[in-house]
Image 1 (cartoon, rainbow, N blue to C red):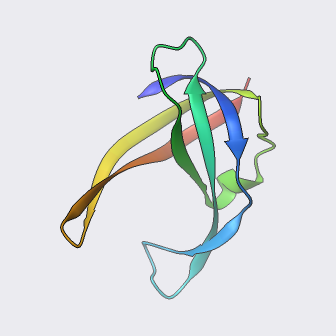
Image 2: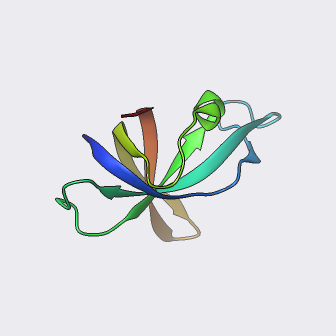
Amino acid sequence: MNGIYVVTKREPVTEVRSQKNPNSTMPACNIILRSADNSYGDSFVARLCGDQTRLPIQENDLVVASLSLFCTEKEGKYYQNVRINAIRKL
């Protein structure tokens, strides 16, 4: 899913366990995105990981992003996840 989005919120960077290597951590932070043209009615949360957390993206910035949507299951419940494949500030 590719598009232009407005960053409505950026949370602080924290260390999370790496999925590739469970014995290591990596920086991550959530950002709240809203489509710039309101083609997607609501805001949604996506996660910046690794080097992406160093990007100078702040609240109210306009960004272009490539996103992957996937779900995970935990204890019989399913959760929607949004991964940022690529992002840059406009």
